[in-house]
Length: 219
Image (cartoon, rainbow, N blue to C red; front, side):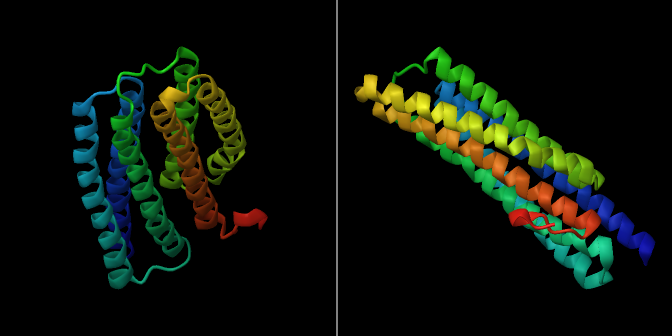
């Protein structure tokens, strides 16, 4: 029974990793679509999101099947609970990419200023790095790496607030480009939210391995 359970858990990890890879790729495309508007890229993002949604359902069904067949306990049970919660975070991150791509219809012919593009690139890179580290921590059941994710969240929040302030100033000086500024601000906020979801995943990893609840400053 234990051998079969371990095999099922290993297969689940592979499926979750594939799901997360698709989400990260879609996020990268979404940021590119804001910087260089392209209707074809937006269509690709929406098409991939349908695949992400299907995989998300498969992961949930797999978790429920394992719970029903093997009645796991202790760390295995906590891992499955964490994957179910991760699944919800990943699906929401996928939706953020679609929202960013959808907002590019507001851009028109407005070019993103170089300073905004540079700051957005840094924010996106930091957020994606947080997500990747959080996923690796969960896949490897590594609470030390999960705590690195928690430590990185303040930096991502700070970058977002800097970019938001920059865009507010740009709105004052270029009010006719309000639609474009809205799109850029949505992209920035979405990447900040990616960091929040990565933090959720990291907190669940710590719970999975150590049984310690660290949300809301607990633990």
